[in-house]
Length: 82
Image (tube, rainbow, N blue to C red; front, side):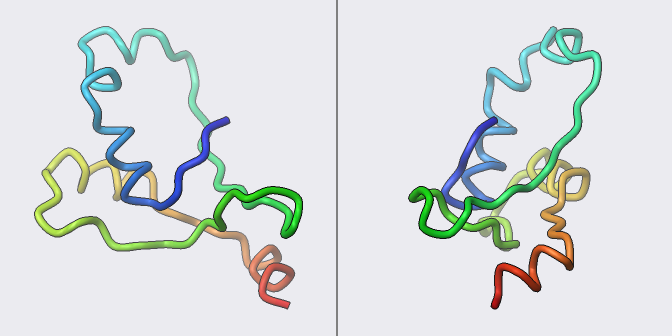
């Protein structure tokens, strides 16, 4: 599990050199990405919120943003926003 302050920070991590190393993909058998939020008051992690990519984001970051969009479940949004 990893935590990022914002979506652009996550995308910068995903498109970093170590993720783009030639053999990195061979280390993964399966990848399932889930967006989770902290329980309010339990820790100081930030909520997941969709954000635009930084201006001038490269092609790789744009491609990853299409493949890994922020998707929040409606049931969670209803609970979180009450």
